[in-house]
Image (cartoon, rainbow over all chains, first blue to last red):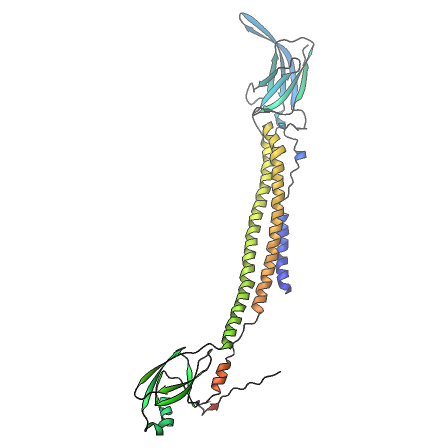
Length: 144
Length: 233
């Protein structure tokens, strides 16, 4: 009666092979490379390009405002996608949800009416989509 | 055969009347009888001298039945007779039924169990595969998502649940696969065991006794048949 045991042993490698076919290789702690993830730990997505004063002639008034131009490094995105940026002015606490000024570009402009020359302006910026925000970053610029 | 019987009985037949016996015997196709302890015959109807005659009826698998039939002159008498099954045949039938039942239990039942566990193992494997594909889909979603809320929900709720599902599916597959292998081995063993069991044989002792009652002529002149039982203790 050894033969049936041998026959059963033929199934065992198949069973073991099938059992080992699929493994849970997902390590959620290592999932930190998506810039839209609040746990994102990669390099900064935002960088300040420049800040300057913009004068808009709108008769009968003339508007003078500070522009903080910053850049989003979209090459860090894991997939090509549209996005928004939520900006909080750390000087006055006001929050603004900005959309891409020109679709397809990663250059953004934040404007502020009440500004002081020589004072550093810091902004808390986050990538945003579907009414939810990602990890906050802080960028600062000083108007000279 | 009848002519031969009449020749043997001929002398006294001239002084007596004759009657006819018509035999309606169960089983009707292969019974035999011995007339007056001398002549073995296979007839359905026969003419005999009037008066009592002893008959010993027998058929394969049946018991011998001894009876005396009175032949009435110038009349046809129907003889209704059902030969009972011999105890050896009844025991053989019971033993055969028991062996067939054991073979059924030894072959069909384990096969059904093996089939069931095989189906369960196959379904478990599909679930196991699906659970793994779900994990891959989660990873793909993380790599393609641009929604912070969706990513948060995926990492805190969906992925742990899917990982638990995968773990459970793997365990279920291991258990069902193990049971399938075990039942397949048992089924093979059981079928081999059942096929090796000898089938019961039937020895018709009544035939031996019946054959021993008379001399049976054959083409070479004839032979004596008899039954002998020696009890061995």
